[in-house]
Figure 1: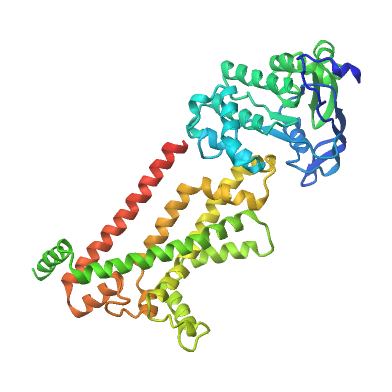
Figure 2: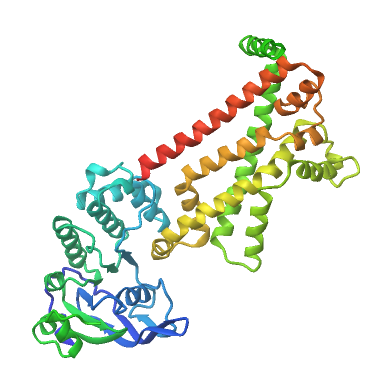
Length: 247
Length: 233
């Protein structure tokens, strides 16, 4: 699997990001199989882009990996003994009804960061994501792009080893998309394992280290990005890249 | 004409801060504010807990809380009366016909309102926040203060609604307080008594104060709603 180690973005991490392993994982609801069974291992540096048409099970796969949902069958395991620190950024950022900075200090408090250091860490993160001007603005009156950046800043202060992003840019304009992608690169450079869903092929080309292609609840292909975009193996992925309407 | 006169006398009583009137209004406020605060300390966490935890009989608890919102004040009064009467289980406390008994009766009336409405609000918020909370690795007990704080504007509105109910009811405080002059006489019981006696000016004066209080509460609810819209979009 050394081919997966071809990084699109230089990684400066000393500690390798934890490896994620799906073993025969499937998820069904009311006897309807929605995903799987699928088996794959995310190692290498990524970022891993999960692609596929709507309803393919991309978000479901992310939620199973993050532990928001428990698989009906199979197992989701990590290379480390302890569950790695992880965070998730949702398509619609879920922000508390408080100021921007309070959203970050809350996340820190939940993670038992001492009170004295919380505000400093939060303000640093706000500055990094260009949100210093909105420190005390109620989070929910920020623009869509600012809200998504705030969600990324909240993930940032938690220094996750793994970051899941579920279509983080699907509701944003190009400038905001650029800011989010820059943030994703920063996480990647810090050595965070990135697992991100998108249905934007251009975005995937810009970011992907490897691609996990899903359709109809099955993993059709898991290949390095270059291989995926230049010569997809599965029929579904070929059709998807060719711009056909895949179900 | 008679009633017109009564209205002017009532106004002068108000403007002169008539001693008996002031005392009655002060006691009303003390009893109702204390009752609502106690009910809030118990009711909000209770509502949040029912929203957060799944347990057998949860549906029954929700139905019970919702039903108790409409508890007739006289029934609440009767229950507290039986509890506090000399022969009752809490008779030794000697609380019957004291302001303390009135506070207890109003807590019984207001608690279900605060618990049931806060349960609804917190559950609504939880639906929105759940995935983020789980993602942050929060336990249920840890979610409770976050949810209660984020629902603060809604809870304030609920608190005011509870205060409105407490200050406006007459049956329960009449039964457990006894409407004793200078001790347990509050606005509503005084209005009943004075109207019966034909002392319309005092009854009207108290009625006006009570009305103004209700107006004030509603203005408060409106302002809180506006503020919420502006602060949280």
